Length: 218
Length: 110
Image (cartoon, rainbow over all chains, first blue to last red; front, side, top):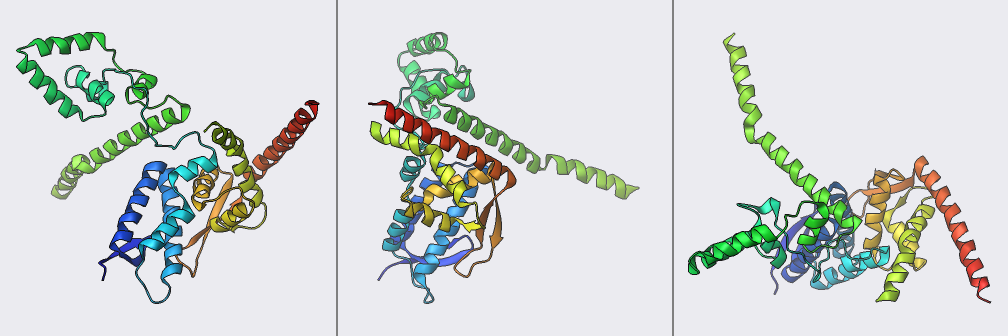
């Protein structure tokens, strides 16, 4: 006997076995990560999900049977993995693929409490800047201040990552036109989202309430 | 891996060209395009085509209409736009020129 979950893809409901669900979830995450979070990327993923729905509908038939791991594995073979896509469409490397790439140590202006030294170190070692800061503070305390000297040295010696090229190098991504485009798009989206959050935060509705109260008083 | 890269480079523009060629007739569903390309041995997996179709649509070369389907959610049926036709003409010119250039280069070997 197997545990079954109920899922909804493109508005259609399916029963799916637990292991099949795990495999499907992993696949969808890989797709989303490959195609990105911009308008176009979301559209592509939506198209693929609609196709997945069609395939599942075919396979489960009238009896509403649960989708098995086998079905999901066949689906992935038919649709292909992100590696397949980039191979067949002629992209030099997977859009979001990372390998060990040459990283350069910079100071990160976006992750800076003081001078971005810890942020830059974090990008270089691919770690959380908060963790790096804690380590740096601990080291400074243990060495009774010598650690702070090291920090200042780094501050002076390590350049700030100002240009897009430098910022890409800091994160270890290859400096290609495509990566720059993607980098800037991601940044723009982040700004858009911040603006939207700001709008929704009720900053403006408070003003609206004031004016409607004034109108009522009249 | 170098030969894979070289082959991939060759395929890059040609796949889009093939897709545009398929669009010449009546509106088609993505899966029909996929079947066509598979039979021609241009692709192996379906997923290659979806991003290309969306990109071409966002560049204004293709447009789609929704059609209801008994086999699942509504489907996008794509067809070529006026801008798409112009683009295709240019691609065809480019293709002919390339084929002729390669032909000449081959003959020069002797």
